Image 1 (spheres, protein in one colour):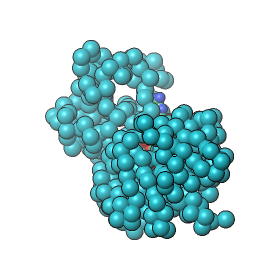
Image 2: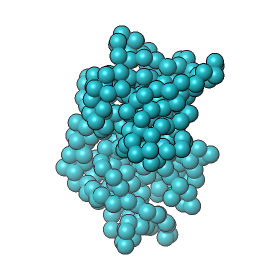
Image 3: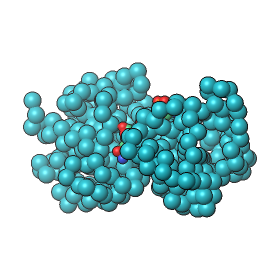
Image 4: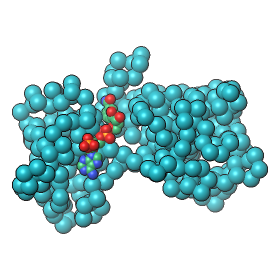
Length: 300
Ligand code: NAP
């Protein structure tokens, strides 16, 4: 029996655990993979107020320690389903059903795919969604990054230090990510922009051998011989297993406003998994605090 069960040990979930445990609540955090969520793969965070530079890994390590030192427990198991029984909330976790007063859903997001044939088969065999995790496998080789947001720009920058050549393929001629990073990339001799273009095919059977790229304006199709392609086209929520319990919006995000209250009393949503305008580390941490304080009955 817990006071609060937090689903997801990313920034929002661990921040909720810090606030819940410090308020004297019995807090359990369920995490189906590794603690940290998406930020753990960020090589450098330099926009978190009060911290000038820190890696995603160090940031999460500190946050996890802070949550555990405050008294929160972390269990590496998935929350498979949730249901309500009167005021009680029940979370199915393997053979067990865990009981609590409040649930904080902080499930974050998963990588969006390109939706190409072979994408799944070639994942881990040349196709990757994480430059920091897999970049070293492509040392001295030619690679491509797909996407135009900050993740793609950051990935291209990181890979430029490891790879011989990096093609940055974006479907428009303007980047969504920050100009400062675009300018940095423009200075690099081994990074080449391929704009207004999309990847239409992944080549190779056992291992990626190249990609087919099509210019959307001119219709020109070309093949790039790359050993690796890093897909950085954003993320999407993964809340389907909770659809029967809390309301989701048309994009699959849990309907909750800045107060983090969902359609069900006692169930809160924090961080990237909820409907929100700004997906930043600082807003995820803020959501964790707001949701935990609401679960502790310390907000209106
Ligand atoms: P994002 O900002 O949503 O960008 C996704 C990019 O992928 C966009 O450029 C989009 O193109 C493109 N895209 C989407 N679907 C595509 C498809 N099917 N085929 C080809 N291209 C596609 O995602 P993100 O870069 O992962 O960033 C997510 C959030 O984290 C953002 O708020 C970002 O600022 C933040 N972030 C911050 C930092 C930092 O501050 N250091 C680092 C990483 C991420 P369009 O532009 O045409 O839509």
